[in-house]
Image 1 (cartoon, rainbow, N blue to C red):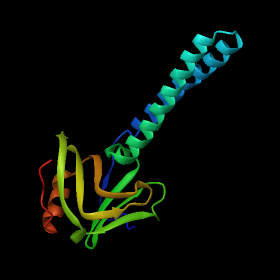
Image 2 (cartoon, helix red, strand yellow):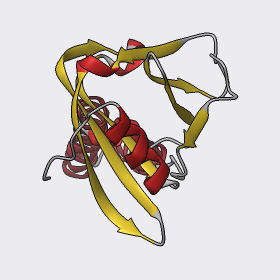
Image 3 (spheres, helix red, strand yellow):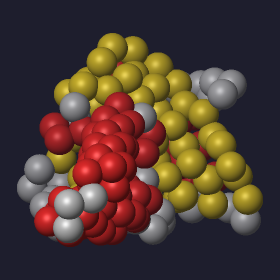
Image 4 (tube, one colour):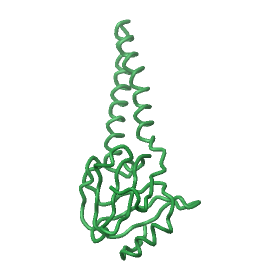
Length: 167
């Protein structure tokens, strides 16, 4: 990918999913340890309570992973680069730029802008058909989280006749 093109970098802290999973881990360790300790001391009721807490935390971890996979949370990462070129739209990670997603301008149905303040916003690109985005799966949209340079991005979209859509 030619990085001399007009670029937009994700400015999200990218730690939402990690923080949620870390909280689950922090809760899981004491609940399992408590269940083991209570069981060795012969407290069956307390052991059962700790096992229920551990099961709830494991379920919460699974929910976080599923929600992160199928919602916009997967786009809230700090290492994505978005680029517009004459042939279409690209995005890739900062670490592995040899692997990238590409969509021709004709495949983009529209875009919307949310949370605009101080020139920073989340821009959502909508595709006319589901697109295969590698580890992100098959998607109908891409969220460009907390990016700047909105006026330039809007002018690029206008150049290729991509219309802004209401949220």
